[in-house]
Structures are given as structure tokens and as C-alpha cells.
Length: 634
Image (cartoon, rainbow, N blue to C red):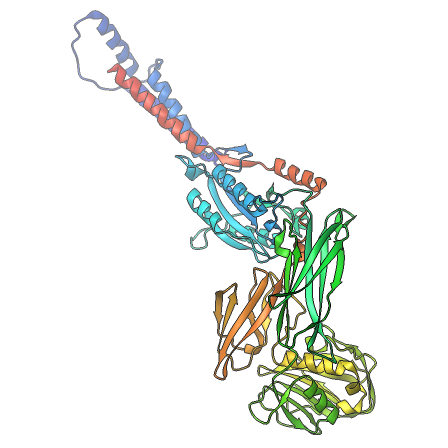
């Protein structure tokens, strides 16, 4: 295949006649004397060839020069040959760094990630073997495929740079996002050098090579829509099974918040039953061990449905904030999901300022959950009002008529009402089942966008939550003593959950997984926040709105600590990040049918490699031979 056939034709029609013309033109030489007649005959033969417009005589020099000229014209035509080795174009190496790549298929063996890196190094050696023709072997870039794919090394032709870049790649605990990685590769292929002033290239010759165990959740969908060639370098074994901790946590009793009830959810990705021990620890101290039989998974439409078991542990007395940790013993090849953590808020809150006419039942409930009533330097305001009141810049839990606010206002009173719907996803309502609760008298609320309704009544919102100028607020559109709510257990639960959310000790999401961002509600006067993980500082933030401090994504599972400082002091907020077990727990590699389809994709891959460097070298060698023949004749 020729890249510039018309250029070759023009050169052929121009240079070849010019070369022949030079040979048939008469050359003027000085007269020489010869000592013998046979030398004269050879001289006359040479002179006949120099007579213009005479028939050319055969000459080795002319033949060699024609061959060299033809090779140079061929090089100008930019010939390419189809090959399967991938050299000579643009290649993107996609390295799967998702959680399943931590798996060791054999005890004591390398992880799948190390196997993928070794295969990627071999690909670099193949694409860039080094030597004189190394510059003609195209350019290669490296992308790490995680939840947020990133470019490890932009396009380069340097073998050494690519090998050094592979040393910087590390696996994470995130799920993989192949579709986003492919879009990133195509964007870089269109403009491989953003700093250069050049036209945008097409990505038609782009070669994609994926190094993975095939556990990417969107692999099938990406293959269906892929327009470029893809080669899958498979690592891992098909029969590897995995047991994982999906969830660990603990609930506090509403009547005794100092009592924790831990629980653990387990999954088993395997075709045979397994038995494991589950160890539970509170703040690093072992408290219980349970032996659990894990059922085998089942195949459904070619997908493995894991076996699942929920384990309850005996109650544990703990009033402070606690780190609950569960661990599987013995571990398996995928050790990253054999341990999980959860942060349980403390049973007791801080200092609270009581405002308005709060009922005696509500006061006793506040005292029961450990809140300390103070008049100054309070951390939380709890009040019940008959008319709008100006609220201080403190997190607040109010009942009846809302305080002065631009986002929530009262426009009158309703008669009786009942709760018909509760937003159980919000931390404030997570433990309160208020559906069906009847209220004798309610307040009609008008809310602005940005206010979240936590409980609906037949006539409008009954419980709302919002942030105003960075300060969190919760308002209940009725007084506690206008219903039977204070005499139910979930009233205590509501106060505990509301205090935890208002004080920033609970996240608005039920779980944070590796690959997610971490969001925390910190005091409004926080100036700096340091993100700590594993004893190392990852980042230092100066959040414009501390009540919605965001950082991430969190690449690894574990305990992250936000250490903050403010004019009033300092503190810390801990967040437990879990493993994405549902997305990455099945470490059994792709089925044979899908393997066959991917092998077909690999075999169908054909790349064109430039041949002009070889043509130029051949022309130079021919000219060297022509020079040697000429010198031998002198």
C-alpha cells in the first residue's frame, strides 16, 4: 500500500529520464597515451558510450544507480505493509488497575496486576525494540483504567520513558470504567500533542491493547460499540473463587444508645460452599468471632449470582464514636475485600441551647441521649416556637413555627394531619418509621428549592432539612406534644440521628465506596482541612463552604480522617470507605464464549507498518556498492 502514489509517479517520470540523459550526454575528457593497443580498444569503447544520442551500452554503474533511484522514489511514495505486531502506528496501552487486579490466583504468587504489568512491558519491547529504526515504530501512550481513568504517559516514541511510566502505575480499590478510558484514548488520539500547532488527526489507525482479567463491568458493552482494533491480554485463572465482606455496621438501641448491635453481610463468589471465621473488633480490640458457612453461588443467564449470608453479633457496650472492623479468616486470593470498616457515631452529643417552649417530654428525651443544656457556647440549638424567631448561626432543630429564614416560611396553620411518606435515605430519617403517625395540629410550610422534604403529610411537608449560609437546619412542622410521637421509641432515634447529622457526624450517603468522593459536614468556621490516610497526608483543603466539604475520589478502602482547624479549635472527622464488592468481587475471569469472541477480535486486528526507512537504507547500501565498483575500475 502506497501513501503517496502520485508523488512517486511524478518523481519516476522526472528523475529516471534525467539520469539516463546524464549517461548519454557526451563527457569531455583529456587525451591520454596508452602503452598497449588492447588498452586503446577499451578506451574507444568508453568513448563510444559518451557520444551523445547514441545507444546506451550495458553498465553495472548505470544499473546500480537506477536501483538506488528507484528505492528512493519508492520511499517517497511512503509504502506500508500490513502486519499483526502493532508496530508503526499509534498504540494505547490500557492497564486495568481496578480492585479485582489485586487477586492472587496461586498462594504466594504474583497478583494479576503484576502479571498485567509484565505483559505491558513485553508489549513496549515489541512496539519499541530500539535500534536504528526505533523512531519509525510509532508512538505509544499508557492509560490506567480505574473509576476515573487517567493518562499515565502521553504519546511518546521513547521505550525508556514508557518503561519508567509503567513503574509508576499502582492498583487501586476502585471499579474499572473501560468506556470512559476508551473515550479518553480517542480524545488523545485526535490531538496527540496539544502543545503543537497541527491539524487534528483521525483515530482510524489507533490500536488499543487492554491488560486485564476481564472483570471490568462494562467490558461487553464497550466491545459492542468499539470502532478501533482491540487486543485483550488476559491475566488470571477462571476457577478462582472469592469470599467478601459486603457491609459491616452497628445500630444503637433507641432506649439505650450506649448499646451497639453489630452486623456483617458476606458474599461468596464460587461454585462450592466455603467456611470462614468472621472476626469483629471495636476500635482495634477483638470482641467476637463467628464461624459462618457460605453457600455456593448460582449461574443465571451466564452470570454468577453469589451466595449471601447476614451475620448478627452479640451487643457491645460503647458510648463513644467507634470504628467497627470485620475480617475474614482465613483470607483468600482477593484479600482487599476480606476486611471492612464502619464508623458508628457516639451515643452522646455536645452542648445544646434550649429555646422557646419545648415540652417536658422532649426535654427528658434530650437529656436521655446525653445532650448537655447550656446558655452560651452551644453547638446546637433545639427550640419550639409559636412565631418566627431569629436564629443564631448554629445548627438548629426546631418544632412548630420555623425560625426566620428565606428558604422555609410558615403561612398559616393546618388542622390534623398524618405522615404518608418518609425519606429513609436521609440520615435524619434513617431510623425513624413515621408513616401513619397522626398529628393534631400542624403548620403550613412554604419551601424554596434546595430544601429537602424528609416527611410528607396529606396537606404538605411535615419535616424538612436544608442548609442556609452553610448552617444545617432541620424543622418539624408540629410540636412533639401535638402527637403521640414523643411516646414512641423512634422519637429518641430521630433526635439521635438529627443531632448526628446537624453536628456533622453522619454522611448524607449510606455508604462511601472506593472511587467515590468523600463529603463531610464540618463546622462553618473551619479554615483548613487535612486529608489523612494510613498515617500520610493526602491533601490540604481550604473549603469555601465547610458544611459541604468534598474531596476525592478515594482510591483505596479504609479509614480516612479529615483533620480540621478553626478559630474555636480543632477536631477531626473520620470516614470509612468500603470495597466495591458488587462490582469487583467476582474474580472469576471471563467465560470461554467471551474469550473466543475476544480472540477473534485480536486475530482480526491488522496494522500497517511504514516501509520507507527500509527503502532509504537499501538505497544507501546500493550507492555504497556503486561507489565500490567505480573505485575498482579506477
